[in-house]
Length: 488
Image (cartoon, rainbow, N blue to C red; front, top):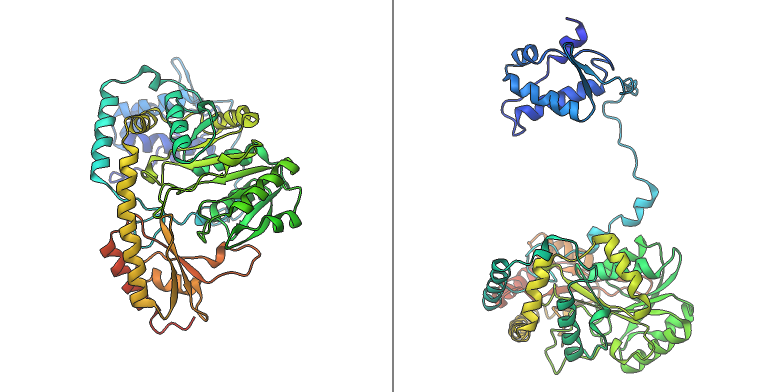
């Protein structure tokens, strides 16, 4: 037998590997063929001979040959055996010093996504992490019942493709809820169901922006939106935020012809301030004059602890310039991955098309369960229970911080939301404090990196939702220990 075929028969097999022996034989034979051993047209060993040489069942080798034949690597000739396909090119010469050579660089376009994952920062269950939701036993019980009911009477439509905007019943339920709770003006046809607010924002950027288009962005801002704008190759125009929210006059001065303004008017991220009514009216007036759009991210409005929830910006928009984005991932649980956008009529068809191209349509089963949860009246009691729990956690955290860290930081207790801001006293760096906290198992997000052009504030963002009061009190003591003797 030729040297080439002898090499082919020395396929190394690892009997302790989790990879099945058949798969190992196939992969090694394919590797040898691609390396030109044997070359195109060369004969492979008979299956019986190769099986004996490898110490495996002949059926194993036969199955590996059949897979190679189906994929076009080899061809069979009746009465002659199996041969490497003549359609394969000759094996290329290996590059010099191939071993240890660096991998090829990523294309320049990929740089738009560099670091985007780090901007989210909401993984893990450690104390103070943001975006956490409490597990409510009554809600989970209802969820189990609704899910089992859906599974016991499955709809054949679940198995096929569906409307990119989401099931009509869910869109009707969302529109009814938003009209009642947030004073949003919409018809069910304007609702587009998405995999959370982030996908809704991404869809809007895809539809609205060309590379280089100017976009107003709150300064400081939600880091994930900043990353999404970078990926969309938009030109970010930082607009400072003060006690009244985004400074609209500053935005007009910086870029009067901006294509889009992104705002969090009910609870500015990360500072928590509310966009004043005067600024809201100024923003809407500018959008009408400039032919611009306003993207309203209403990410946690369900959790307001003093008075009724604030009305939406979209609800006072007479010009149809506001795109309203919300989510169930904060109100129920992040793993649900269900959000929505209320889209002006002029944008509806391109947004539906973009939804189809990126994800086609929402998953049918969770969409159906959420529909039942809304329509049967379970959502409002769930929110009342969550507000009570989160209020208790907020107050416990604020009290513990004041008890243990009154000399190191100032606590801002929010009237809405799932996190609070702790401003550090002069001389302390939020980056350094965050790192010290991480060494003690805490996730205290620094706020200064969220600033774009405005002078950064040294502060920590501390989540309290989804964390029990006792755990938060313990975490406050740990944070104090992390800061003990810290000189910034």
